[in-house]
Image (cartoon, rainbow, N blue to C red; front, side):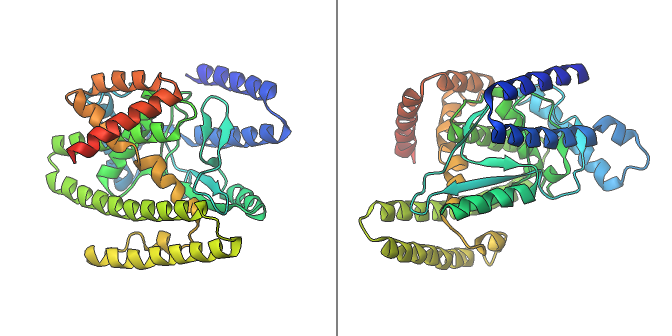
Length: 357
């Protein structure tokens, strides 16, 4: 496996030297250095479990993670490889920080294009300081910017990704979901279509959590997870509605000063609506810190990326009688369509979903 990783590194380096300019080359080198940190810190989970000095808490979490990992391949038919068979403690809360940006009067994300994965709606950094510095550069150019910490990291099967301390959530459902989600990216991944990729992986994640929790006899915990997901959905709907209002505002012929004032008013209304939403949650405040930020266009962009098309993929799974193997085949064929054909098919399925609601 080590030799294979070295060969892949050589391929990456040759590609970078061939295709990249100086600034892009430096960025790729930083990414490779960050990935190398993960490799250096990772240890086989089997070795950690065999070590008598391993804490009881970590031992339980890792044992459960390996049960979940086995389930992913045996019951969800996700790749059976060495991903998430290693563990790395990075001694920090997030593995990467993603910079998201949009123009002052736009809800369309800026995109960055990379080797192997195509164009993405964010630019990732292993260093928070580097991410903040790049975000500040974009701010000086007049962009709305958001720096989002990410708990998970995937090389899309290029390497065997380790389980990270950043992925060890308190909720078992979330711990299972993140493994299912990241492995799903290794099944189907379409260049230049973040919405497609993330919605597919999220659909696999949600179906996987359901099957895992039921199999584990944790119906009550699963119901608690569903309540959390319902709150997520309600907040996302509120953010999407705000995004739609901004989109309509930016189409108008108002002056720059008028648009800025209206934009400020819309975000002020968002805060008021969030407070009303919390009342229906009996004061549940898990989103207070996020909502307490100085929100701008960029904060709303990843909402659509991760959530908008999930019902489409759930409908495809339903059409395959919830057979995951057939579902993956159907999605892979879907992904082989050109971008315009995919968009047309998405619209057809969305119309079907709307009729059944």
